[in-house]
Amino acid sequence: MPTTSDQTNHNLVVVGSVAVDWVITPSAERRDSVGGAAVFFAMAAAPLAKVQLVGVIGHDFPQASINDLERAGVDLAGLERSDGLTFRWKGRYHENMNQRDTLETHLNVFEDFAPKLPQRYRESDFLFLANIQPSLQLAVLEQMDRRPRLVGLDTMNLWIDIAHDKLLEVLARVDVLAINQEEALQLTAESNLVRAAAKIRELGPKTLVIKRGEYGALCFGPDGSLFCAPALPLDDVVDPTGAGDSFAGGFMGHLASTGDLSSDNIRRAVIWGSTMASCCVQGFSYDRLRELSREQVDARFQRFVDLTRF
Ligand code: AMP
Image (tube, rainbow, N blue to C red; front, side, top):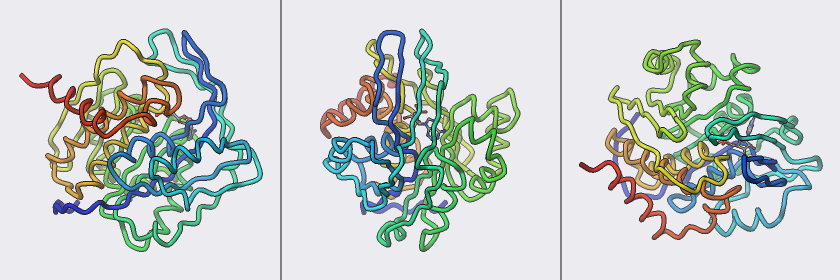
């Protein structure tokens, strides 16, 4: 990975699910809650960088959310409108809010989606392949005019199970993998996280971010160093959905806005990821992310600095 630093605000392309979710927590429930990996990612990265979204929606996707994304400054030229129903996911959280069960997944318009990137997206230096079928992640990567300076990837247990070979193909072509702890273990058939990390780095990505929910994140840097970031202890977790995607948005948004891929800046990016994830979980859908001013985001970042200073 190159480690030059400049001050330009590089564009950041994201492809991933754009969804209508049904979220059930121990104390509340929201139907028709707009979500999807690309939406959470975009709303979290937008205060930091110029995001260009690739995805597909059906006729049931609310116009109000299109307006929210536009107001946040997200470029939607790569968001296709299709005749069918939007991707739908339904999940229920356990009492501790750390674990959840997927009750339903309907790919709907994502089943036949063939992304076509607008020309201005193809020239971007930063690309994040958020959670969606690996074949779609690959299709976007292949349409870039040249290899972006940094390519990040997320995935989940479903794709590790049913699209393993395609996923390995994508993995071989990315710089950063941001993945849940359980998924890292599942991907490598390992029970030890350090050994799993070593195996993943052999598969392609030299930087690995392991998301551990309320326990924070571990980052195995490109130079092999290990960095550990806490999660902010909160007494008002409303809906953890999208925390991982918001983490990725903050992480990639910071790297795109600074253009600095040094190990030190990757550590700062992990704290930006943690900052945006902590905001996301304080509301349903992207409600909290939508309300954030730049000052509030900076203040939350500072709480992380204070949390670990001794
Ligand atoms: P996270 O909580 O960060 O893991 O992401 C939650 C989001 O992932 C929800 O808004 C879902 O719509 C989306 N999601 C759930 N299952 C899938 C899937 N199989 N592929 C893509 N996105 C998914």
